[in-house]
Image: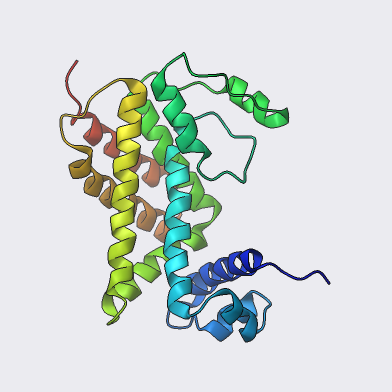
Length: 240
């Protein structure tokens, strides 16, 4: 049997931790239980992570990185390389720079999708596409978002772990601000209200969207929340 790399061990343990927290809560997410869920020994856990807190920090980093990729995805053509998490950011910079950028070469199915891709003509449509992309990620993997919410609530009420909740929301605000700035640049419009001030409103909306869908599974309600959020954001644009 081939020896498993540290990176592979860490990835399997992170995925297992998301599942355990979603199903049983953070309190029950012991190193032993997470190791068992990942089909690893406890020794393997400590080979990959120094402590449970280090794993929780990785959950925050992994979860928010995935959410950034989800929100920014409508700004760029589909990438043929799933290994590149940051491809959306790279492509969005090229789009914003204009037509003089070098052609993006892709192969196979990725090339076909990229050829069909068109940047929305209106910033409202672009913002909605980003929020819809986020909703689709919740529908595809509700356990992950449930775990992120549970982790934030647990950290907030647990002495010594408050920084995890603060770190999580600071990152959420950064993601929202980055998305708003990238969208405005891509569509050649300006915000009348600073994106840093709009970011908490976007996060409040996505929190409500997440809780509403996880609690009811009602997609129609979730899409109405998205439409209301886009309408609100439109009101903060500089009038043409």
